[in-house]
Image (cartoon, rainbow, N blue to C red):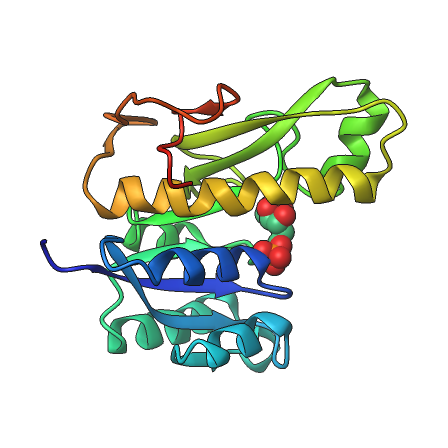
Length: 221
Ligand code: GAR
């Protein structure tokens, strides 16, 4: 097997998607290893999850820096020091400048709890419920300077059910996120995804365990 890609994860909170990546990366044949987890908020659950898994962590508080650029220079320095090759946002709730985004272009993923390009931004599930949308989901995409924008790597569709509350819908989508992110990172880390302009391609079709996932998930996810 070729060398595992060294992955950095940016978080701001609970870190349940981080946990899904930690769990997936335990498999010997998984093509990525988590080299560093950085939170812009100290003391969050995600940092504790990473520490429990023996992964190097850093808390880099954006408020400690006079500008976005200096905050991002500190992120870059930590990521480079840890030899990070691929970056994953997992509930990282800071907008990054175009300059940071271009340094990590097509090496940087984000997960968002909607079927992008619908419902970018905050209060996703509340807006889905108020709109009457019947199918929502989650998306893993390459990061661009605009919020929740960029070439789509993988999506999972999730039904909105009668009587759903925001919490119930968020839980259902989150369960799909936990399957989707490890799958998308596997595709990217193993070099199966090519980016051509604003489109990602080359994702293999396969026998899926759920027709709601695009591309279909292999049996082990
Ligand atoms: C997840 O639902 C993720 O999709 C969302 O924040 C949550 C983080 O949960 N991200 C965004 O809304 C990005 N625009 P987690 O910390 O338990 O992974």
